[in-house]
Length: 111
Image (cartoon, one colour):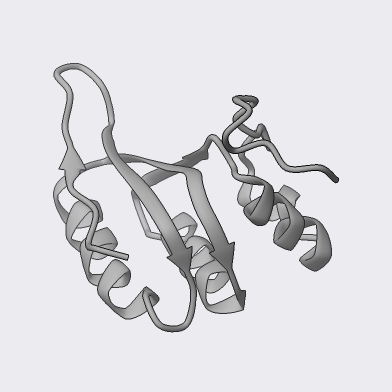
């Protein structure tokens, strides 16, 4: 996974769109990008709709971002892979975001 570009639309939260793997081999680079975004923006929205693989390292990164003091982090557009791990770990409620999956046929998987 390449380091995602930070989109900062006028009047809205800073936004990161992640793609590919969110796991042990990618979290170090992503962690730096997230910390940098959180250092300069009060609100960060992270789009998870293009994540096709996630492990507990990715889940730890999500929890770290949520616990950033004085910042608001919102996860949106959860992919099927993200929803499966959140369900398995029983941590969907811990993140406090609505667990909604993108319903487009390209990302929808059979459950």
